[in-house]
Length: 354
Ligand code: NAD
Ligand code: ZN
Image 1 (spheres, rainbow, N blue to C red):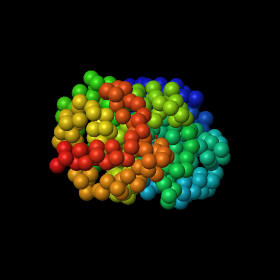
Image 2 (spheres, rainbow, N blue to C red):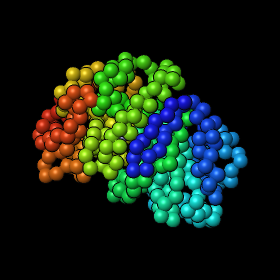
Image 3 (cartoon, rainbow, N blue to C red):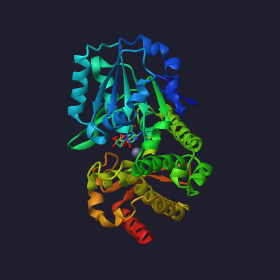
């Protein structure tokens, strides 16, 4: 088992490894026994596959389970309110411990519930996707509004993160791609050697558990280091948005949930690498093709539509668009790009994708 520490306002540990749940009781005996009740908020699909496994490690405790819709649909006001109703009906109090069991969507909504129920109760993240190496660390919680994704939420750090990588084996291929895109994003903004390892083009399914754990650990370390510097996103934390300006536009155009977040980020990174004039662009495009990232989507969306979404991005202002670019691998910076240059670069990327 690997251990990382996140030195946020309220510091906490991230435990990562195969079968990490078996240490749950020993590691968090106090937190578990001090709770008057333990409530698991579980992604419906994850519960179907893995709830019995999780419960087998929580036998001595008074545990209730509330299942929420699988994936992004759960990030709604309705699910948020249903969670609160469940907690109230169960007689929960400020001493109740909440466990968020699922991918990033579950972590976001359950974290938001934890931060608002009786003005805040403790919660533990139990991430079940590769992408959640990103979302489970950093304490951002959110639900979506009809007018925008993640528009309602809080900064609220968990008490701990237990990342049992055994659960990742049941992920569908597009969710593996989605998560690995955020892994390579962390490599691009931090470490050339690690990036080279990833670009070697091993099939994701050929990665051993140890190799996957090593990648996730590195990704979490990058995220944690940035969050420690900038917990409330006033500066450096923006670098985590490498690839995200275009990604959010693609997701907006396609409709959230129609393309996975990480797959959209993979396309957004290709664009950001071109704008950065990064020497590994071709190699990266090859990596995207060999792993089945949907690069051809870019040829199907009119640039003007993407532009309209990018202009709405809260980081953009008056005719210029704001991007995270790379001076070189590991050296991100913010750059304002004029619309004309943005369009020319997009056309150039299309010619490379062919
Ligand atoms: P997700 O939570 O939507 O899950 C994706 C799909 O995988 C769902 O259908 C889910 O049921 C299924 N699934 C989850 N675990 C599984 C498993 N072990 N086996 C089989 N199926 C499984 O997706 P995600 O990619 O983990 O998270 C995306 C969400 O994370 C987005 O809402 C995004 O906004 C959010 N996010 C938050 C942060 C943050 O800092 N809070 C950062 C990045 C992303
Ligand atoms: Zn992301």
